[in-house]
Length: 122
Image (tube, rainbow, N blue to C red; front, side, top):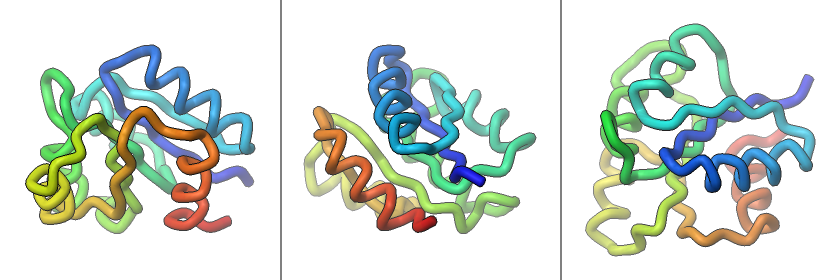
């Protein structure tokens, strides 16, 4: 059974790029355009990994990470932050919230898949 990944980003283009890369590697992919929609998906679907942007309307990625880590079925699910933000303070806030890893956009598909396979082994 393929691993299932939720990708969360307000940019349709970025979601399409991530989805294309992951589906090409055999993953099932679900999408949400912000943290609020992501929580809705997580309420009804079990996923093996969450990949989220930071800067989104309605609920940003760091808040999403905190909410997921606060409890429930996905509290221990690996979470990668995929963002243009690369400052140490932003990385520290992501880590403090409970993010498993950090990837800076633009990303190389091979790099994304390498990290995904590391935090979400088959």
